[in-house]
Image (tube, rainbow, N blue to C red):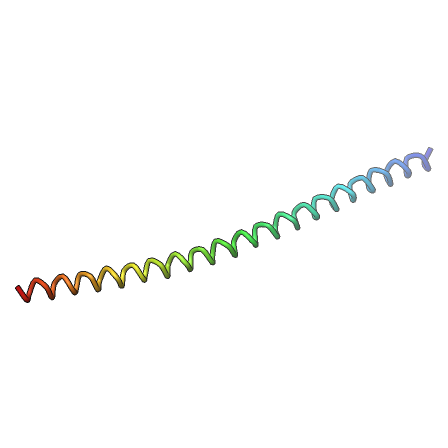
Length: 73
């Protein structure tokens, strides 16, 4: 009777370990995907900041040229 109970406990433990292994594997995959997504978003953000700065510089230049034209007339 005790041997059967130990076998059942061992089988339950084995099933739980298998479940934990699957969970760790799934979380590792998800973590990797999230890190990749984060890297892409950081890169995209840097690109957008650069484009915004370029647009700001161009607009400031246009405003300066318009003001210069106003003072000439």
